[in-house]
Every structure is written in C-alpha cells, then in structure tokens.
Length: 334
Image (cartoon, rainbow, N blue to C red; front, side, top):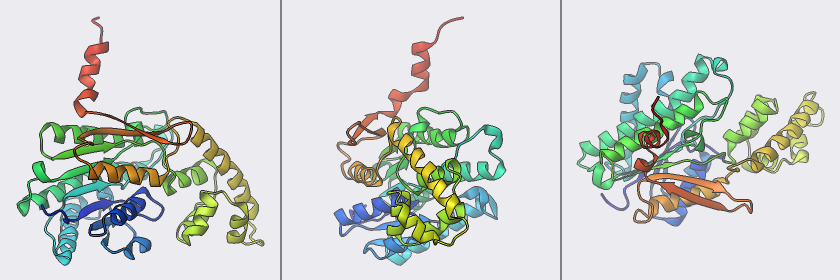
C-alpha cells in the first residue's frame, strides 16, 4: 500500500481527542490524508489540507433499516469518499467514537443501553469490518499492510462500580483485538486504554450528570466559539459564563451554582488515579504509536498521569493479559 494512502478516523467531533489527533497527524505529515467520520461535521478540520469529513451516525442499533442497512449505507458512503479522493483502501483505522455513561444497572433504560453498546462496540465492529472488507476487495492484504487502533478505556481493565454497561462495552474491544491479533488477520492491532481525558465527554459528565447543570446551556456553548467553550468548561472562568448567559438571565444563579459544583468535580477527577489526560498528550502518543511500528508493536497501551503532571505509557502483549492464564495462577481446587 502506498505511504500516502489515507487513514480513517471515527469520532472527530469538536473538542475531542479525535480532532486533536487529526490536527497533530496532518501537521507532522503535510502529505498525509485522513477521512474523518462523525455524526456531525467538524468545521475546524474541514479547513485543514489533507482532511475530508464524512457525516454518518455510527450507532448501528439506532439505524432505521437495522444492522444490514447500516452495513450497506456505511460501505456505500466510505467507497464514495474513497473514489472522490482517488483512493481504493486504507492503511489504518483509528476509532475514537465513543460515549460515556454511569449509574446503577436498572437506571440504564433501553435508550441508554442502545447508545452505549451501539456506539462503543457494535459500531466499532461494523466500521472495522467494512474497512477490512473494502481493503480485501481491492487486493490489500490486511495481515501485512493494515493497522487497527482502538481507543478504549482504562475501565476495560478494571470495571468500577456504576459502569455496568460502559465497562463491558469497552472491555469487549480487548477481546476483539486479541482474537484478530491471534489469528494474524491484521498486521498490527493496538488497544489504547486511557483513563479520563479532558474532552467534551468528561465536561458533559461533570456538568450535567454530577453538577446538575443545564444540558441546553452546555450544548449551546459546545456549538459556539471554541475559545468561549474552553474558557467556561476547561478554565472554569466565571466572568465568561456570566457574559455568555446574560446578566438578566433568570437561570444565571443556577448556572453559577452548577459551575461551583463542576469545579469541585473536576478537582476530584484530576486528583484521583489514573488522573485526567490532556487531549494533546493523548493525540501525541497515538501519532507516535502509529508512526513507529518497530517500537510500538501489537498490544495494550495504558497512559497514566504522574504526580508532576507528566504522562507515562505502559504496555503488555495481548497474550500476557490472558484471563485463562490468570485463572490458572490464582485458582484453587475445591
């Protein structure tokens, strides 16, 4: 495959790790190209040479014509974009698309289950299958030429309380990567398992779910100027919130109260293990993972934040994380 063949990246919404990765990758490689898929367009990325955006809802469980209809529509959309760019296949797929949720199991109604499982796992399976099938159809040998990177979660390794749907939706990705790696179906399969990342997903969780802030206000700020959004939800700048809400807004007091609680939740998250990663640090590590196949071989990679704020990267091979091997080590005969 040509060195300039495009990458496919899912989940490249504004303020996301995917967005920062696209910027970092194309800055480091002016001749590189990325096709990005998300349910909304990213106006910032559309201005960058080498980027091509594709709007597509990546939740097969919510697709009106079902899973078969999703597969057909996705394949058609991806092939059309490849044809437009003059390409036939991909050298790499990086899946950033994902949603976060938490709470008791019985509070996860059918809509929440559909969203979490649909985006985090079923969607990842379908996108990967589509890309590998397209590659095979044009003579690209996935086992010798294709890299797959799955943006998973630290909670795939340790399922915390209140994550009965989210944790398994992420943990399933490890088994997917392990099976593909064991079968040598992909040249290099990487599962990247970060803890919390300072993106809009974390902000929404802290603002709406924990601080009980207005979801309508969050969405309005999210869709507005990037600098204003960052001032409020990253820097927690009260004057910017006051200005954005308006001094005569009857809900201003509630917004200010939510901001106080939001700041407290952020402080807790940054102090807890494994810390909160910066999107730029994650993007940089992922660019390195993709760009240095000799150093970063197939396996599970876990970034953590040290007390000084720096990032470390730990890794293990897929077979070394075998649950059967662990069972044999700790099991006792009854």
